[in-house]
Image 1 (cartoon, rainbow, N blue to C red):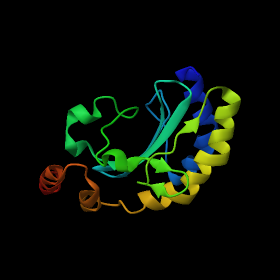
Image 2 (image 1 turned 180 degrees about the vertical axis):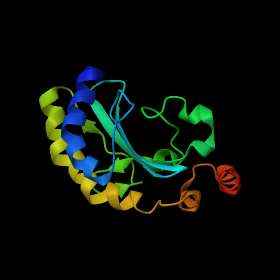
Image 3 (image 1 turned 135 degrees about the vertical axis):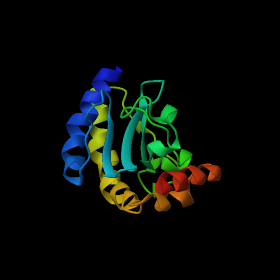
Amino acid sequence: MLEHHFDKSVRRIVEPVVTPWGFTTGGGRGSTFHRQVNDDLFHFIHFSQRSSGVEFEVWVFPGTPLLGPDQWARFPDFVGVPTGQVAGLNAKVGVGGGASRFSCRDSKVLDVALSRAAVPALLTHARAYLANFQSLKDLVPVLEHSQWASLLVRGQDG
């Protein structure tokens, strides 16, 4: 499936669900939804089509520009994922259980995967997971690289 068609379908089906939660794709071209929690903290829901073009994954994670401008050079479409692989949304067990791979070999299959699996997983798991991250200190325990915590402390100090 072409990336443009993928993004258009994702936006059509997912946007009505996550917009009431404060998410937008504003400023982006793809299918990355984001919301700003405070000056330095954002929440993301990113739909990532795999290189094969027949599967996609969903990544749910908190993020901050304090981890470096290179991580945010392509905001909002692509930003660094400070939680690494833990950000994968598993339709059955939630965020952090290993990302489920959803089919998107054509638009009909994509619509079914979004409606019957990905969106219900967002409703069940993603919203509650992201609610855990309301300040930078909440991000520290889930950082992929513990040394990044010092960047967050400096960002809060100054």
